[in-house]
Each structure stands twice: as structure tokens, then as C-alpha cells.
Image 1 (cartoon, rainbow, N blue to C red):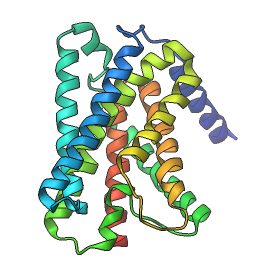
Image 2 (image 1 turned 45 degrees about the horizontal axis):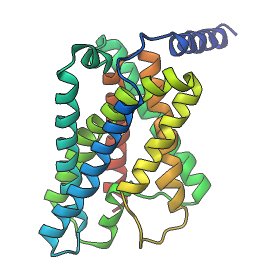
Image 3 (image 1 turned 180 degrees about the vertical axis):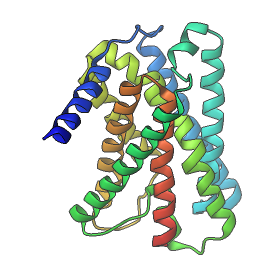
Image 4 (image 1 turned 45 degrees about the vertical axis):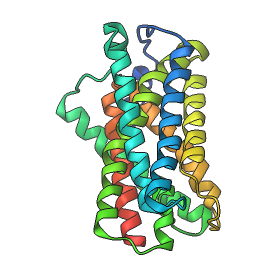
Length: 256
């Protein structure tokens, strides 16, 4: 009984942290639109260009990954530089560090959440699928260099670029405009839509693919949003995303 009370107590404390108001971030919804467009255009356009150049207009899985990596790096630089020019906006990104113990807790909770989400997905769809970002690896022979590039993208570039945009910029402003829970849900929906648009899996026929392309990113977006709100740190959300990417990489390697 005492253990159950302790769990409820920790849950109540977490909800209090999530509900705790934050100082209104500077700027408005135009900042959200700007950062979303920068990331979307960089990922789609540069991904297509790099893929076309390296693969003679027939993008390979590796060239797509390279394009997304370059696009993510460029988007991160552009958005980071724009916020650096205004100290208030840079501070509002909440990139300051957290105590090591809290970061370890974030990592453990996020890894547990991504494993639970994947097991639930397997039960619902009847199969495990690789992450959409590397799903096209199933149709080609993949070398060590491709896996290194996948690791670089899934574990470093993607967490930093996407969390900077969705949990660093978008979530705080939508929370201020729409309210706590509506802002969280809309941000997660935008995140899922972004994934569906960028990480194209058209032409690949797998039962349950739609779940992995839309539902899984939406649920992951909710989890990473809760991490951001519960810790008050975008850096913690990046770490949570990193754990999702690391698990996706290991799962994909084992499946392929």
C-alpha cells in the first residue's frame, strides 16, 4: 500500500510540474511557422537534391539519409543562429543543462516508454517494423557506412533538429495560445504530420505501416512533450528523443 501511495505521489508531483506555468516565450505564432518551414523545406528539398545528385534521380536509402542529415544540420544552424541574435529567444529555448540524476531518469523513462510503445505496436499490427527513416533498407544491401550514417542521423541530428523546433519553439507557444493539453496534442500532431511528409514510405507495402508512420510519431511526440513540460528543459526532450532513436537503430539493425 505504501508503494502504491508513493507511485501516486510521484505522479501527482509530475503533473504539478507539467501544469506549472512558464514565462511566456517572446515572439508569436510566426516563429512557429518560420521554424517549421525551415525544417520542413531543408529536410525535403535538400534530401531530394542530395538523393538526385548521388543516385541519378533515383534516390537510394543511403542518399536519402545523407540528405536528411545535411538538411537537419542546416536547419539547426539557421534556427539556432536566428535565436542567438535575441537573448530572450535563446533563453526561451530552455537548452540549459539539468542535474545528472534527472537526465538519467529521463533516459531510463524514455527507453522504457519506447520499448513499451514498440511492444504495443507489435501487438496491434502483428509485426515489428524498422523505423520509417530506415525502412527502405529492407530493399537493398546495406553496408557499414550506411549504418553509421543512420546512427548519426537517428541518434544525433534528428533529435537535436526536431526537438529544437517542436519542443523548443512550437510547444511553448502553442501552450500559451491554446492551453496546456491542447498545445501538447497539437504539437504532437504537427510532429506526426512532419514525419509522414518527410520520411516518405510510398511504394512500400507492409500491414500496419500507417500505424508506424503516423500513430507512433504522434505518441512519441506526446511523450517527448511531457518530458519537456515535466522537466522544463528542451535538452531533456532531446535526450528522450535520442533514446527513441537509439532503440529504433538497434531494432532496425536486428530486424534487417
